[in-house]
Image 1 (tube, each protein chain N blue to C red):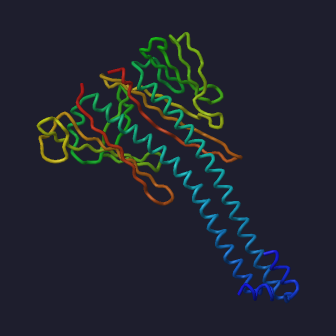
Image 2: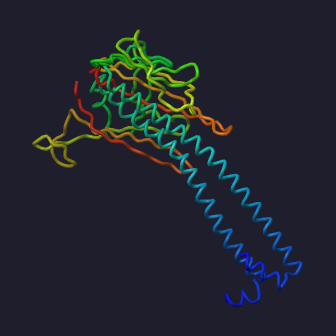
Image 3: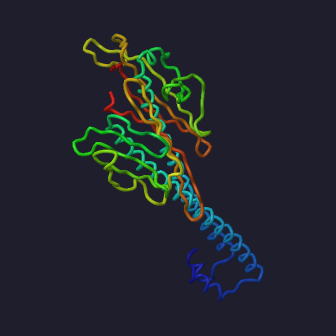
Length: 172
Length: 163
């Protein structure tokens, strides 16, 4: 390309040719810049959505696995779930939302001796709402989970509701 | 052609053709990347749908746990919707209904049961055999609209009168 332009210089362009050329370049440059802006914007929202997806996955896989492994419900309310498990060392598993909207996992021998294990989802995503509803069929128990996750990437906020229900397999 | 270009320099028409080809390639690249990023978004909805489907299976199992008659009374191969009954004085419970409902203005979740037939050895077979009164095939379907097209995902399992 560079070589060609040099060659052209020896021949020369007419003014009209140059003007047409510059006009075309301008139009193309504008289109390119606009497209890049669009791509960057969708990149940002794609990043936010992938954050939400990963957080939902971590939260649900963690919670559903523990619910399936449990025998009975101690507490199931907004932002707090405590489950009884017949495990030799760990009898109580707790999922709770903290004041900074994180989802935390704790466990212990009883509800009074719980130790904090850590958060379930990354700090990019906040748990706006987490509602546990107990279900009792008379022969088994289950938990309905409604979870609202919100993330902000470069000023763009995205939030989504996720729903799941899991049966306590030890409750049969 | 190439020799001529080198000797005489490129003309306006040739530059136009070059710019034209260049912008087509650039346009294709930009299209591809934006398609990729919108695909990431579609992925979020399909994750949500996967959990809705999982919830569908589990909630029909809770309906089964309440009473097997709740399941055997359902019409074969008929779409039912799930609703969460919180009005009941004693318990919150999932129930089956024929009243359509849309979750979050986008997702439609239905389930249906189909008869199961077993051969003389008790194996489930697709045709012939005798009707099993204690087993049903459960299919949960979740459909949603994304990028102006409707996607449907289904999960299937067998449920049995185990209680």
